[in-house]
Length: 196
Image (cartoon, rainbow, N blue to C red; front, side):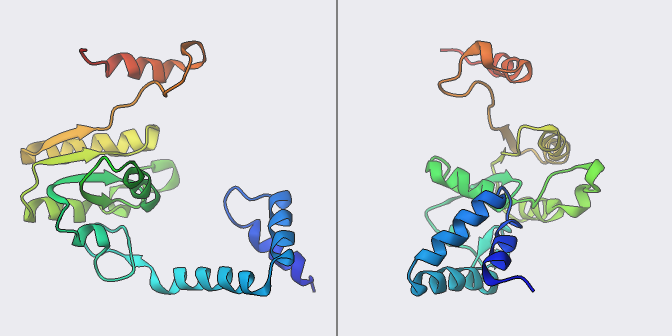
């Protein structure tokens, strides 16, 4: 039977982006800490698993039936930003730029992975759009093959509803040098250019 350190290292390596060396560093760091630190970490993980659920409206993460964003009366209920995952919602929120509501799809269309429209929260999105006075839907799916396929699919479904449909702009990263930018990104930057 493996000892406690080996077990912990093994568990850490199951996390995305954590290899053997990082897991070893984590384990020895926790070993040096006060026992309370390890208990706090363990309790935070337990609380995450026991208390977090999906919001009944946007399908983001919530500790109650409805998340804090959907309950916030200061948010603009006429604008919905569609994202692939709860982590994407959190990334947009960190910018403090978007003040509308969200809809989390929980993935993107990927036939090679067996993920079609029925595996995503697309029906729920269309239901929300039919029940609310929505004036704009912002498609904020990832800029990859799956995200683009999902965006195209949603565009076909939402366009007939006479709702303004926008897509996040993509192109050159701030601080990027043109010589190091890939052709697809550069092409997208030219297509999405705007008048100054």
